[in-house]
Image (tube, rainbow, N blue to C red):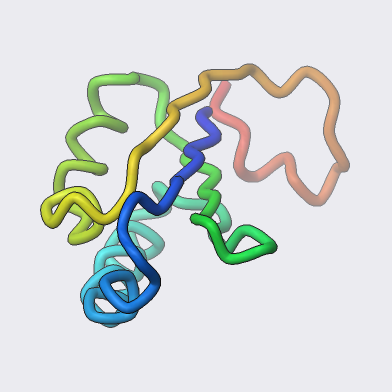
Length: 96
């Protein structure tokens, strides 16, 4: 599992120009059960995604599809972690 932190490197006007395409990118990966949650950072300096994949290369391939990546809107910090303690409601997202 990975936490992906996005940091905008372009003005919000550029972010807003690609937000619809970014939302479509997210929707595609939600349908594949690859993203557990996503959202804006506060203040609006980027975003956060929880990605339910086991391989960093697969995460990088997924990110390469993101319009924010393709158009140099954001930088990405990929953090791999293994949930060892979690609420029972979260257990369906844990890959065993």
